[in-house]
Image (cartoon, rainbow, N blue to C red):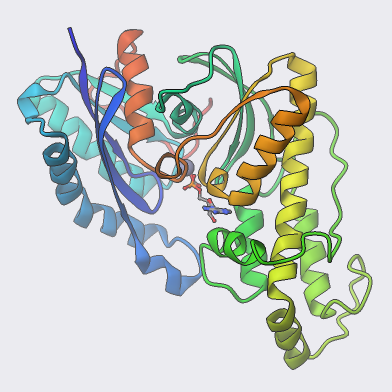
Length: 347
Ligand code: KG4
Ligand code: ZN
């Protein structure tokens, strides 16, 4: 018997719906919310409103593209946590109403687990147990995936997430939100070794990015003229702007280079500690071309088998919710109607 599921993602600023049959994604529609760019970050109330506007057309389009009718669905899945509570409530209420109306089972999915399991969407997938570095706008985690329903966090950030490190650096450079993809674009033309930013010495498998952010702040305040660790504020506004304009590609490449080295050094440590050589990345930052290339290179050097989800399954999408829901369906992990989404959720 085949299993067809509709999945809905609404945890942050993407409204997405996907249909999958037996683990194969048949449609994955994503509506991004442009409204936040002018505010330099996601505005929760505006996100909720935009989800309400998008959810019906996005679900209709996902069903249409998959060629599936509501009656053919075997269950409805949704992101239950973590995320912006108002945003989560839109997807959750919609999914639960639909499940109730159709008398179909409901499946609540953890957004960060779904990012990891996006690696099970392509035909070439890792086998269990595998290691995953999840790098998104709100999280940076090292996860051991024992099975599709048994995931264990073995390291995480103690302050900013990797995506925040990209976005906050971009903001300091005067780039619009979200800055990660722009840093990626400028970095492609720059020299990654031109400027040296510090690598934090955090014990174990945890990460820290707040020191890097401060180093970049001082570096820009000094327009690259002084020691980047010193808070000396030598440059005028005009000097800063001119310095950034003339060196943007090299600055972006150097920042990206340091973020990637922080991530990959911890990943190497995790491989050593766990002995697991099937290595994946996931989350919005795994769309970064520098990180993708660095993972492949390191994998070749270290003898790992590496996996990266296709671009559309890296940033927030319902395809990853659908694949996670499929494995939960097989394991009989259903959720009762009335399940309440939460902004922060234990793993
Ligand atoms: O996973 P995601 O879509 O949303 C969260 O769950 O947070 O991740 C969004 C993050 C943002 O910080 C964004 O700047 C970053 O992923 N990002 C990138 C790239 N594409 C998205 N960062 C660096 N390079 C990229 N190409
Ligand atoms: Zn995400």
